[in-house]
Image 1 (tube, rainbow, N blue to C red):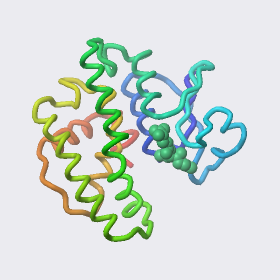
Image 2 (image 1 turned 135 degrees about the vertical axis):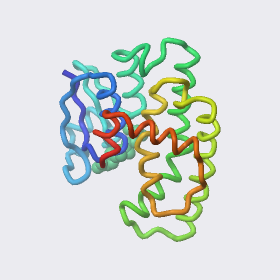
Image 3 (image 1 turned 30 degrees about the horizontal axis):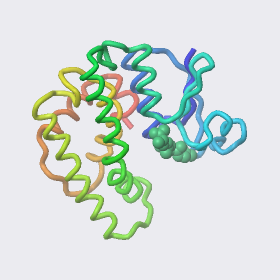
Length: 202
Ligand SMILES: N[C@@H](CCC(=O)N[C@@H](CS)C(=O)NCC(=O)O)C(=O)O
C-alpha cells in the first residue's frame, strides 16, 4: 500500500492526502516532521535529502516534492480525472502548480508565519505580503471568471496544489480584495468531502 511520510498539519502533506482521497487511493501515513521530528534522522534523509515532508513510497518507488507527488499519483491512479487525459488541459493544470510554488507561496507563507505561527516578523514584511497576496490571487480570480476550476470544468491537480493556501488566505485576519470568483471557487472546494476531511476542517 502507498506510504505517506509526514504530519497531517503540513500544507504540503495535505496536498497529497487530498489527492489520494479524491482518487479513492488507500494509504498509510506516518507522523514525521514538526513536533514529531524524525525528519533529520539518517533513515529519513536517505529517502529525502531535504529533511522535509512529505515523502511518499509507492511499492518501493520513493518520491518527494509535494507537487511532484501529486502529479505522479494523479497520473498513475487518477488519469482522466485529476490528471486530464487531454495534454493541453494537463499542461494548464501543471502550470498552476508551478505558479503556486513560484508566485503564490511566498506571500501566503509570510502571512502564515505571522498570523498562524505567530512569529515576530517586521510589520513592513507582513504588509508587503498582504498586498502581494491580493495581487497574485487576482490573477487566479481572472482565470476563475472563465472556468469553475483552475484548469477547466473539473477539479484537477492544479486545484489540489492550492487547496491549503486558499484556506489559509481566508483565515488570516487581514483586509483582502473582494475577489468573487476566487471566493466561489473556495466554496466549491469546501463542498467536497475529501477537501473538508484533509484541509477545510483544520
Ligand atoms: N517544496 C517542498 C517543501 C516541503 C516543506 O517545506 N515541508 C515543510 C512542511 S509544509 C517541512 O517539512 N517542514 C519541517 C517540518 O515539518 O518539520 C514540497 O513541496 O514538498
